[in-house]
Length: 429
Image (tube, one colour):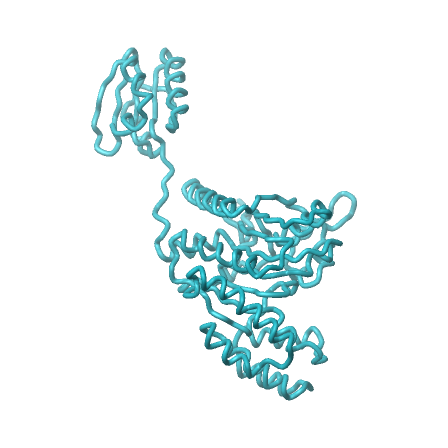
């Protein structure tokens, strides 16, 4: 006999009713927030051509993609990232638009992650993309929405680490290092692995000033004012200074909105996706060891689709947001429930269905079943269905049993029907 668990893929989960309702409510709140800022929701295909990702500079590692072959022999992938297809969609459909675009998405992402590390291979990602503007205000708005979203869901002990892709990029520009060496340096810097970074730098043939600047990068982390003052010792060219001024300008807009207490600067962090060109950021919640929110400015990405538009945005894992909320016990137990569990005889079927439909039109949740002359079973079933009330529609009488305290009240059918216009009163008993 084959056990079910052997047929269940790693890195995916069933979502049961109560969890699903909780997640749907969360997604609805996210959608409402995005919409309140003018971000219009879009959707992209679950399948995309493999070349869409493999041909784009700085995208997700191809080994993390789920690949399939279609009937024409072309390689497809399950959507491993949302920003790139949204950028492709915008470039293809708004090529001649001079205005800015504000787009949002809530979609499932598929990645061949290592499930033993707790990573899911399918998860829900939500995000926004602000396209067509390079204004400092745009970066600040996107980050502010992320902060307000976390606050809106009850999370308070969090911080957004802000950096700038150009700061490190311009430091390494002209160093002569190949892609592998640059990647290793970035890893040691972001991991703040001082010892390995120092040993690795000793083996590289690069300018001593650049070495001295790189070794200081992991420590350029903390309060913005402190980091800005210490960063002066690292700046080696005007491009690095411009990057720092841009980062400071975005921070000043956030500070004017009273959000400075959530911001830290980290000039030594990079991002998984190398298509970022400007301000980059990651959001962390205390006691939760994963990046909860990540994004940045990517002014060159849409050029690869033939339409150069500056853009910025962020994305976050909805499932991880729920995990972080659970740590702080923000999510109260969500129980799917039924307002009225109605049982009737065969003779009352038509009248009972009409009554139930009238109640549903008033926003009540009503289930129906046929009475089988076993009252205890029906009472048990009402409890199993988490029903607030059990309604017996037998003959010309309706008996209502309140689940919470087992109180019972009997009505004539016509009198009970009159209560439908007052749903709150019906639910009280």
